[in-house]
Image (cartoon, rainbow, N blue to C red; front, top):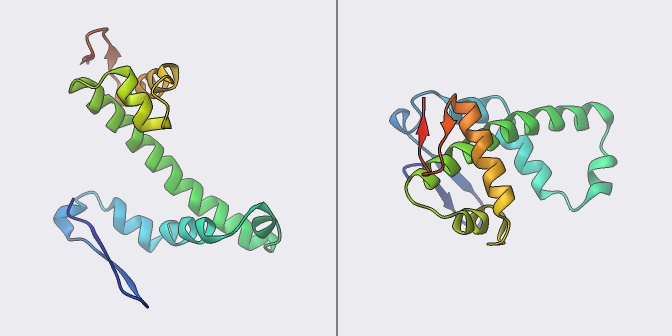
Length: 130
């Protein structure tokens, strides 16, 4: 992985190059405040903290976090398809996705959603056809 996160006691720095982000997804997540919003929300203790925010701030955090979550969900689906097509069993995928090797239906659902997003059709052999 070429994107790096360097931490010191006082500062954390994200580093990447243009070749690490050819479609500017990372740059947009940072420049658009999506990453900042998601990390802010992650740092809050619980629902009460989120609910106590002023409405405009809560709405801004919600929208920006949702944008990042949507893109990450799409990437998880694509990774699931790639991992399955390179030999991962349903149990392995389930364990990676849910920490439960018996959650095969969840793994299959994420796999099928990935195929759909990619415009592919499923085969039982763990490969896909355009």
